[in-house]
Length: 85
Image (tube, rainbow, N blue to C red; front, top):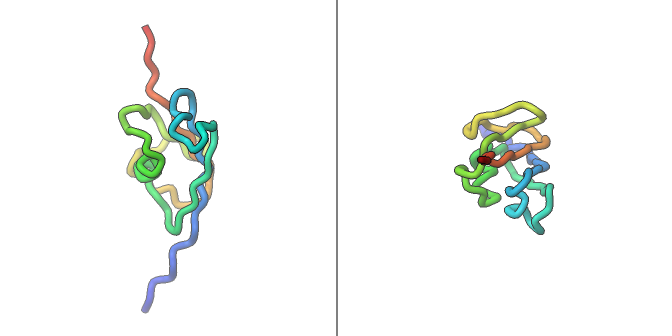
């Protein structure tokens, strides 16, 4: 029996604060389309965002681990590490 092809997935990426410069055109939002679901870590890698600069990744308002598979088309928000003094 053959495996059915993976369903295409569309992620709307919202990068906050200083992470915006990693998105095409340095805009607040971008869209990534893939042939199969990705993990949060894979999305960061695709956008060339260093994990060390990321405090949290949220999918539809809920924090997810970097190895969590984002199985459906949705909004993914990426928040930078906060610093202050």
